[in-house]
Image (cartoon, rainbow, N blue to C red; front, side, top):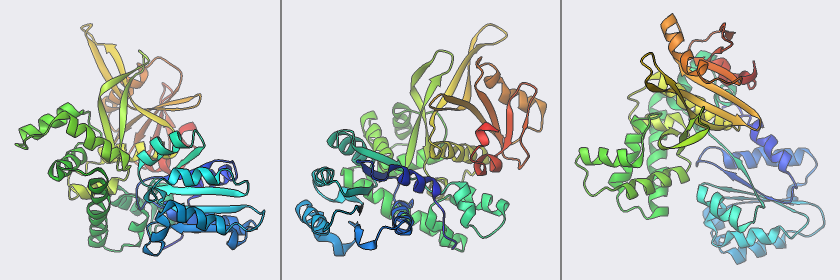
Length: 414
């Protein structure tokens, strides 16, 4: 397999180097967090003059490092290796396995020549411990599975073949080492069962594994559809699964969110400039994991594209909502139109629609209608499946093919 370049994340680490904060590399398990730190970041340091004995690396999931799960032993070990005034780079994989790790890491902040990088697979580790315990001195770098651009950089085949592969099996880095469909399916299936779900069940003491599994299946089948815990609980009742309440569903959804398996997207009233609390949409962090969960059924390309576009926008650092535009139809009745994505980053905003084709004028009108009723001057885009050269409609809406959209880092500003 070709080496996968992850320059987006490498540059984020470089920009944060020696900034006096703890760099927290988060993301779903097996998405490449450890690989980012070693060899990618480690090689960068060594190529820029850092000697290997000034890079202290520990994987806290390896059995040989079990003794370092004791915070006192870990602290003493790291400090024993700091023997001069040159900068030391401390890289700790899966730090949440260490009890009271925040106290150990806080102590390192007071050593002037120590720069700390840690990984974690649980978002509670980030949101509660890092932000609270480090009092704003934890700096997150979120790592996602491979983007389509990263995937194609290591894929042996044509761009079109890469797209067909990515659409089905997603971007977990190790999938590129698998040669047959059976190997790919088996890898993703085992990853889901023996890593993600097992981890969620053990970490949260899940009492109803049947409910958790059913919930994952429902969310997989309805990716990108509007729903809420009440609606989901009613689905369980209608399927004769007893004693399932809204509180349980809410908790289990939060467990899935905490593990980075799924992401929740809220609706935003564009004209009213306010959020609509319910219902919401859920997308999978990796489309291959979603697909294997439902045995590669329901592979409607429009839904898969929508999920992939959402992930790409998140990778690029945008805040993403589902847009709602209220209009009055010909009979003066109020009607809500949906904009697939409202993307914000600093002063920038983009409105994006996703569809398979625009072959018929009626379809173009349908996709344009929500965008044309927004009433502001921010960029409006329609992403289509067709591998076309981008163009603009008379109304100034950018039409762009999905592959160009994903491969061109500046596609939003064409």
